[in-house]
Length: 595
Image 1: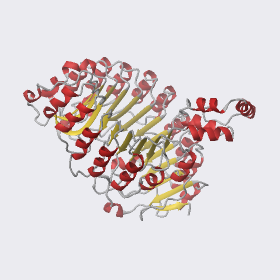
Image 2: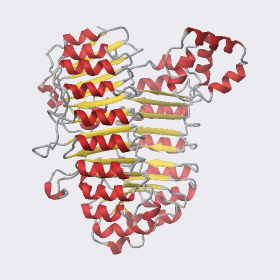
Image 3: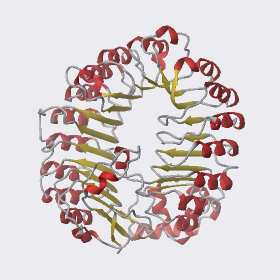
Image 4: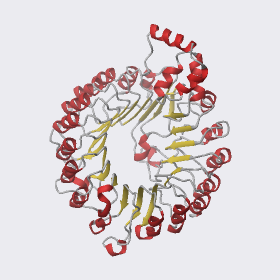
């Protein structure tokens, strides 16, 4: 059941098999089928299987909130226990989508909260959620809600969190990471500590909420099963009592060293015995000894928000041989990555974010290049995920990743423009080797500089990306012809994002028509017209096309963090939808299709 249409003979066998299987057995068997594509294939066998799939489906992910209608979803899957819903395009995380673009949670919560009587988990991502929305959810589902994840959502305050804390006493997971929450006081955490005894994971990392350490200690006393806490900034010395109480804690992030250089202030900090995932803020050279006593037991280490030098990274990582996940800034440099390759043989995930562009704060050799990535590829052969901002890259480094990292399922590379020259462009052969050898890849992102990939290289991506379902490409290709050649090979691609490209609207439309599995495409920075009429060439039933023309008006729009959205390039968003044209388009977005 891999999502392909069965051959007639096989379909007949399935139908005859169905006729002799009791209803109860089919319910049991279907309960073990989790992959949504397998579920979809099973539901198409016959009406009976379709009905059983509807009654036994426990979880649904809606990849884009305008692609489905909440009422139809409710009728199709009346016994859902878990729903994940994604809103604004990913570009919202980089200030390219205004805050009032849309993706409102209100219609979904109003339509589903009460009728879905089995709903125990709700995950919203990049959506606008108000206090009123959360109040409706709590009134309808608060008595049985076990998991509430608001990931990069905006529009609500701590008043809503206080209501959740007071009413949802079965809550096991509360996730609020990177949400710009209006802070009306820390009472919400006290209410959570008093009313909840089953909480397992609490995350309000990067939210800027202020909380009292005493409430965290009370939470640890009452929630013996608390294993994960990721919080906003709080001086680590104020958490000594919390750490002494939270004996089950395994994952912690957010503790800060407010007085850098004052190690004596933090000497009494003792982390819980089971802690193995750690992320600390503002840690400098003098504070590193705090983590040395248990560094060999660490499985995840986040050093993105520290003041560590390249040499500091080398010292810490050399003491962490059992890391599975490492998240750093590119100040780690090639020398730091060589240490990673020599030490972290079990590493599964590596994330190298962009650091400060001030050369004085960067590694003297210029940050991360092909040397560091090659060292990691050779030394860490269990890697499944690589995301890296690099200053230089070569075809040989990409070939090394393809040769040694056979388990990669997610690869993302951004080539920074800080260096005037790049050693080896275009990267056609390296990209071909990586994609040809990393056959498990499902997600692929490549953001280069002009000249980084020729039309031949773009064709290679299409030719060797048969299993990839999500792709982001920037500054790739040379002509419309290269885009068409790319599209001809992307038979299974479901989501595509393009930025800073040379393609015309006509080529974009023709490319979309060549990708049979495509459900979503977002494009920014291309050869746009003022009307976008050539985009209508991609029009077909159940396909929505939204066009944002190039305009200086975007300077007045606000991004997620309240800053001006300075992007004035045209944008295209087209997606498959069972809900028809959306009714909440802002005035600067033109719905081209359906008319």
